[in-house]
Length: 298
Figure 1 (cartoon, helix red, strand yellow):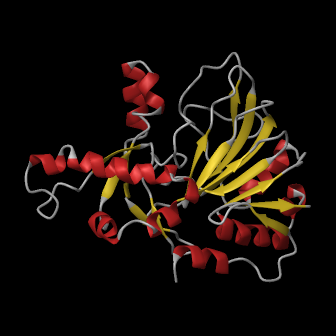
Figure 2: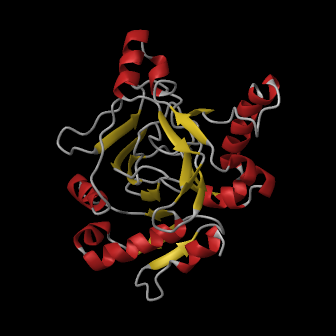
Figure 3: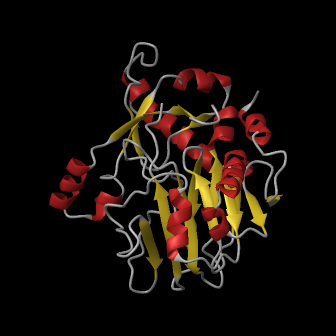
């Protein structure tokens, strides 16, 4: 059974939710669903989670829910994490405010294909992201099915990357703009994490290509099977990593979402990457995200 077939088969047969698939590969919009009710119902939440495993990212519009319900819904999946750079809402721990306005710097963190916080030993399981204020034009977000990206790799590449691991760094991303002392302190607090290049989804069993823009290098490539002479390692290993990272940019694996006020996305961070398009400056884009603590990739 392929990764994509396994995902489709996980949808509940007796679904009570109105589900509209958005692409052949990833993403579904759920209509006539009140996420505040889902947060309070074991039955509705179980159905929503089944749809999430099937489609990898779910979208909802017109969700005028409170911050407390936002946090309550996310906590259904697990405990929430903070963020060492962005911080959290003072009254709602775990709710990160991602506000891009005229007073905020034009960081280039989000507009790269990434899984959230893979620089952690235990990266997030997923996130619940709500749009507070959207630009009139622009500011879309794209998600990518990385199980499908792995499935469609050439067999020779799958054989080459089997068993490889890679480093993921907060120092080289969020830390890069900090003064050197603060950058080193950030790395000391969050040392580079090492993860498999291909991880296994703990609930679906899918194989997932697990390198992204936080990934700096392959850690165990330089061995007798891969390296005849120095050029096989440098730049050979870097070229292989760049090729693997580039798979997230293939449109056939993607879905693109146009944000409106009170729209919400819930995604599985283990099997997807996303890219927040920053094409709206100087308009305002304000988002609030609850990230759910995950497990260690294997």
